[in-house]
Amino acid sequence: MKKIIMIGLLGLLSQHETNAQGCSDAGFCTLPYRHTKAGQGEELKKNGFTVESSYNIGEEQTTVIGLAIQYNRRIGRALSWSNKLTAANMNGSFGNAFNAGDLYSTISFVPGKGRTTNISLLAGVKIPFTRSNNKINEVSLPMVFQSSLGSYDLIAGASFLLSKWDINAAVQVPLINDNKNSFLSAYSPIPGFLSTNLFERKADALLRIGYPLTAGNKWTFNPNLLGIYHLGKDSYENVMGKRETITGSDGFTLNANLQVKYLMANHRSLQFSVATPLVVRDSRPDGLTRSLVISAGYNFGW
Amino acid sequence: MPAFLYRGVFTAAPGISISGQAKISLDSGRHLLLLDSFSVSSGPDLKVYLAKEYPPANYINLGALQRNSGTQLYPIPAGVDFTAYRYVLIHCQQYNHLFGYATLQ
Image (cartoon, rainbow over all chains, first blue to last red; front, side, top):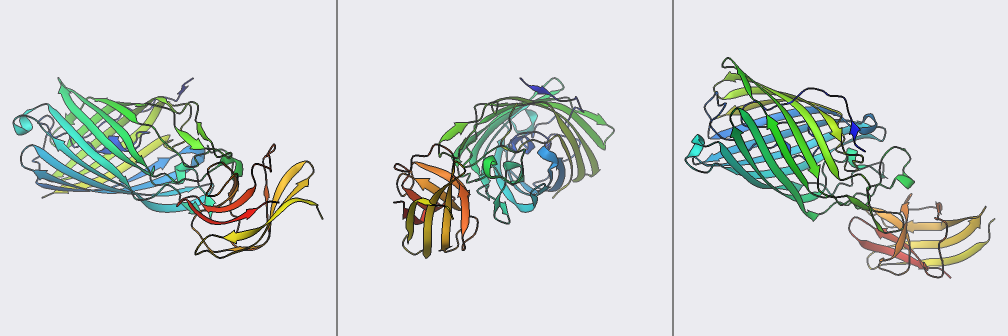
């Protein structure tokens, strides 16, 4: 049975370089893949750079400070290449851990005549910088203390503008699992976390629906609902050396997100986001258990 | 002093230094593994396995190696058939590399 969490804010993306944080997913909803005409209150530059930080509250009151830098490069009128590096600092009952996370490298493509279309497509990969086996004083840590899921993923998606509604759909599929996490709850000095020894995670499918609003030339608000369906049950290797599926780890997550963007100048902006889940899976061993995400970023282009 | 049901001397894998004995005892109805006078080279993700063979394919994970040297104790889950699980392994799980083994007799 799904746990229904109190309803929070609707989230949303600022303009159409979506940089939303706050979803309980594996990260792909944070990627930019809209470069269509609607909502553009500013001139898009050939190069874009974003630095972003987020504050997250995870399971068992674990707090996660996320850091990300992102570089976007337009290639002609239809293509854009984005590279995003992440890192995270986790603090909680096991102590404090910091590590690099992932590289997200994606290409977005606007079919037709450049920016006059209402559709954009995206494809890319997620490359982990860790094998998801960070430890503190040689104690194995659960996934919420890991800065990466430890898998090489394929990402594919599309964005549509339908009247004033902004719709994004995507899938994230683990291609190569390099997760070497060694956390077994049976041997943990601290209770409350699920076993994820040699964890294997299934794919996600995402659908986000937003309704962007502008206020003058400076402000953009984008409330959105983000639904994520985890397409199978995750698994781990138990004490007996046998692979065990995790009941309740598949299924639906619904997040509400509000993004706000303030255009400082033609090619500089501040971005803010707050998000919370409304519906979560019964079991989230992957550690994507944020009950609240607040983020702020600074973007400039040239 | 408990009576030891099984014991074995550790043998190192190539390039590894390991010494000491593995001893199985029964204490208050629960089996325990004792690593006695134990020492092993450092490794990134060393685990203690009870295994049917080595390299390990069928094994019981007794947890992370507590320390690289010194006597240490590991509880063993109930119901283990020690005639089948005849080996105590020190195994690097992250890189799937065997460090050493002891054959229980």
